[in-house]
Image (cartoon, rainbow, N blue to C red; front, side, top):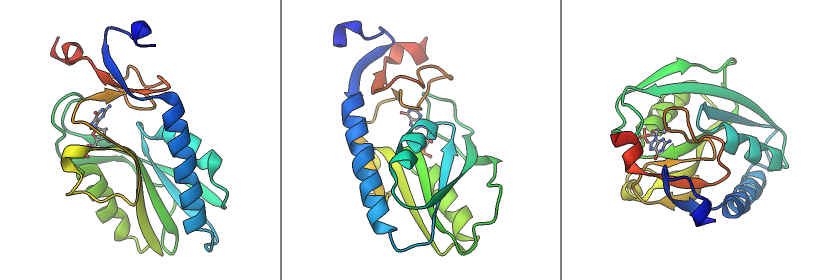
Length: 183
Ligand code: 5GP
């Protein structure tokens, strides 16, 4: 498989099979934890989480609704993430709902922190977080309730994650060759 990898990618960090296995395990755990609630309110963070969210939600065995938020970091892809800005808000109030934020990747945790603060203020019945991957250098600072993988501190693409809108639909998570963003 490695010899078919695009020269824009250095290596596969998480294979398609491993992703699917972990998504299934996360869905099982979330379904068990929320088995007692009337419905789970799943908040997907665009754009990066849309593929993860689609796979995760289709494996949930509990009643749930889906809504989206879009955030933008002032920093550029491949560079340091900066201040967070709300680009698109939820359609409905979440007061009294059991809310699960679904993020693609947690790096410094600025985005997740912003979201938790923003949504906590809207009086949900409960609020938890789920992320597909977290960069291990920040693992102590940022707690995530449901986490798929820890990865090294490199720029990754695939399974929803992009670089300048490229590579999002790869079925695996791969390290981007630094020559792509240094070019
Ligand atoms: P944080 O706010 O945790 O520092 O950064 C989170 C956001 O930065 C993610 O939602 C994502 O948009 C972007 N990000 C951070 N690291 C990566 C990465 O390795 N690959 C991609 N594609 N996006 C990343």
